[in-house]
Image 1 (cartoon, rainbow, N blue to C red):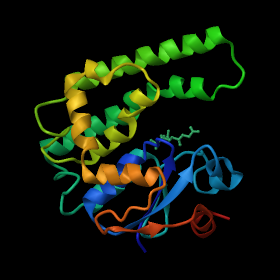
Image 2: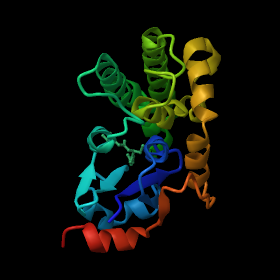
Image 3: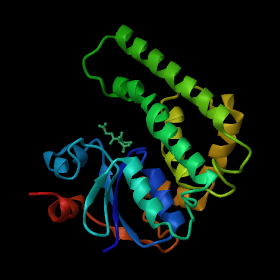
Amino acid sequence: MEPILIYGFPAGSSMGLVAALEWMGRPYRLCRVDMFGEMRDPSYKRINPRVETPVLITDQGNVLTETMAIAAWLEARDTERRISFDPLSREADRMHQFMAFINTGFTGAFGPLWAAMEMRRTTPAMLAAIKAFGNDGVIERHDRLEEMIGDTQFLVADHPTLADGLLIGVARWLDFHQVIDKARWPKLAGLRRRIEANSAVIYAISLETGEISPGNGAFQGHVDLTEVTDRFGPE
Ligand SMILES: N[C@@H](CCC(=O)N[C@@H](CS)C(=O)NCC(=O)O)C(=O)O
């Protein structure tokens, strides 16, 4: 069977993995999940007890959670090195470094902003304090990322890789939460422009918004979440 990526909307980080699947060009399926709706159904815990996306159902029918584990699964199968590099190369080390930074501190910095958005019982003063703390953390992590970016067209090379996929799924949260104008970081702004103009990323974003888009031919269609849960979730 083809692997199935469960991706979340709205604005899920998993969008970058959808783009990576397109870049990789091997047959895959997708399962689209409303993170504020069907993901909250208790049955979702059969697929991911931590109630998060992304989740990959592998070609062996195994459930694999966590972005870094899914990226490693893809990397191991990217024998044509379309989205990764020889594991012993300097580029591979640098790609892993970016991915680790993006998936930990960079992504985590947005946590308070998501929490503030979803908080039900709070006071305006507490909300303002959480948002200010969140904004400061996001800006600081962006400052650090700007320092890390080199002279290549994309994060590691002159073509997009897994690191660019991970970045673009999350970087747009800066605009979503209206933290600050992205122009503060010229290298990152240019990089985001290039990644966002990539046809696989345009395609992945269009799927998120519910458009049915054919992609480059590797996409074999959507699978319903109930089917995924029934077939691959433990009893
Ligand atoms: N450690 C997980 C985190 C994944 C994660 O935070 N996913 C978000 C969407 S981008 C999510 O599902 N959030 C739902 C929630 O927190 O309620 C990973 O790296 O895959």
